[in-house]
Length: 490
Ligand code: BG6
Figure 1: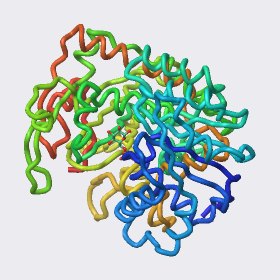
Figure 2 (figure 1 turned 180 degrees about the horizontal axis):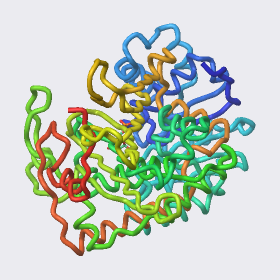
Figure 3 (figure 1 turned 135 degrees about the vertical axis):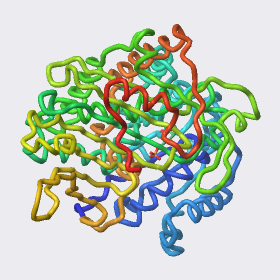
């Protein structure tokens, strides 16, 4: 494992510090980094929230939540006894900036350490919290602010948030999180592309037939149903996670890992996305919503039942065909799909290479399948390359695809850190390379807004699908029309 260097002493203020994200992701991530000795003894984590809680009450909430959110065996009483010393609580309402005394007092006299404000709240509060930090004089030249997604619901609202936060923080102090960029396998995409000379000559239209991106979840929307209704899979997953994957996959080689070198290449991809018009939307996008059904033997409610039987046109599944208009990718379709209550929690990128130009195996001509490179993002992270091989036997030439299969878990044999562990450390170190720059977020929204407009103009229907499947039939038909099919193992 790479050597872990402790980060400089810090005060990390988590707004929304008692919320779901803080409990499920941020505190477990910080606990793990603390166990590995990356947090200096004087570094503090300060939860800020509207409720009136004493420090002891807050510690009790965190202890219960860590016990249930950490993987079994990871909670250690002795370690908790030292981790809890870092935790503090301050009551702070996002809109009443005069009442931030508890926070101001806690931070008083701690101006020398790195100060990070993490906004794990609704985006509608981002501008006001940034302003509260400014009016209470809690921002210095070295302070940073982290913004959780969703950053708005369209280009206009994203701009509004960016402008409001930009009035208080410089762009280089703003860290916009897309947690997919903190995932080990997503970073491995960079290692695969730029740590090997093998792939680059093939990474283009002359060798690749098409690329498939699948980010599937078996869980439904669950407790977030009220939030999710009116948002949908396109805004929740495609605008950020899937487009970031497309960027890392399709960008030109950056000259270094420097924050702007990578982000400058990503933005070029976003700006080369062919807009999807209302006419294209009908042929090249599919919207779905899960109905009632069963997954792994358990009955599950449909999306509208979860919404107390309210009818809704929000999509819980989306599939689309995207084109990148540049020399490298012109004419290569990128098929994207993501959804809830699908067959399994399964994310991967599949690259289908072109057919051999001429088969020398005439009687077997239908048996020569194109090579596939599968980059498995989760679970069972790894890379698999399928190649044609001859089946052993004294007669004939029976070919079949076989796999060169690399499983990262087997190869490296260590626990994969959660994306938030990596991203929090990057913020504390002051390295924004794995975060989205303002222009990226806005370019992604611009493209997504076009699709939403297309859906409205073409009155695109939301098709119901059965839980535990790969989504509505129209998704398979979209590829079928192009003479292709989703690569699914069964
Ligand atoms: C979040 C979305 O950004 O990503 C959720 O808002 C989704 O709807 C989640 O479930 C998926 O993340 P992961 O890391 O479980 O693939």
